[in-house]
Length: 168
Image (cartoon, rainbow, N blue to C red; front, side, top):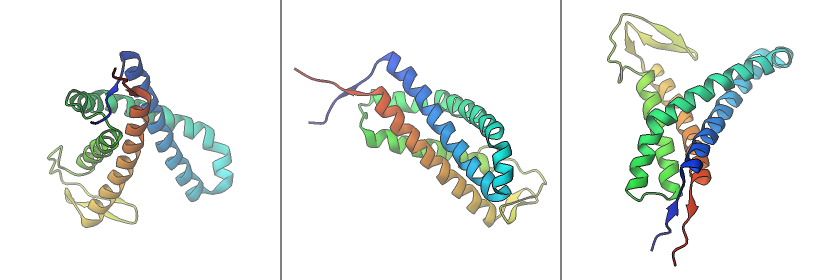
């Protein structure tokens, strides 16, 4: 018989906030590492606090809104189906931001076919409104990173929200 996990409204709210904080910390850490690698220690020492706190604030809002709009419905569906184990939370945490981010980074969600070109990460990512293989690779790598962040956020949310129910 599988273990039964339960939660309360208070733990759900705390879990969502904790998840948003962890997600923002991961995004901020990635940004600050990149800032150090690209600009060196002198620039990093001068600007890490202001830039890091700005990134943290925006990332916190991003994660909080994402958790409310996407995460809560996914979580509620899993919860109602009795899928309350840790692996469900981690898998849903990975897949939700992965799919969302990949859809945003490509034209899958928007269907845009505008005539524009873009260059990033050492190559052309879009040419005449069409994503290139380099652009798709970049989108997939960034989506994997967001999925890993989401899996960790899902783990934190699960650990914060759920407690093992004792049956008598």
